[in-house]
Length: 103
Image (tube, rainbow, N blue to C red):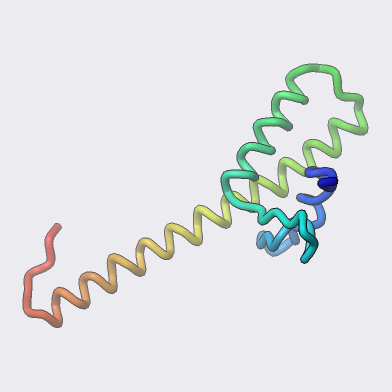
């Protein structure tokens, strides 16, 4: 039996924006990824748009959504930094090889 996904996301996303696995080291472990976070954000939006959520549930969904958005932003930033590093490494390699860098 798989644990409740929203509760697992809450447990996995810490204030620093990092997201380890959702379910610890159990056999049902799921790692929070950018893609799973985006999918959950879409579910939250659908639930909020439905108008069926009560006030308390709306608050909880908004809080969860905020944590997920922060996680996604951190993931995008990390990937962006990684791409910048790759470009710098490529430029250094080209310069060391005596080849001109392409634009």
